[in-house]
Image (cartoon, rainbow, N blue to C red):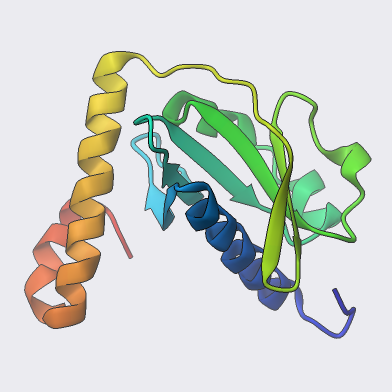
Length: 157
């Protein structure tokens, strides 16, 4: 990616490419998902087998090195991935995570994430949260004012 692209723009491009990859894989991506531990998943993707993949988007090495909260996403996903651009030094990425590398608007899964299955009760609660948030976002497209209370209940900005 060009150095002329700002870090927020770079992160947005990587996130879009990662979401497109999810769709190609048959995963359903949901952006900016608030988690019960107070963290926010950049992308939480529901996979065809009912498992969840959490995808943490990084705009560059500095973003990765200064953000040490990524292990906290493991408790709310069956697999954890980093999505980075093609220029990102992959040696920085933890071996115990999956890697998604984006170039322009496309991305490839370069390393599968190890599975760490969620407990059934947590999976059910996360699936409920995923469905409620998805439904609220669709409803907001039709009538933004009517979903204010639901969005507050889900702690969504």
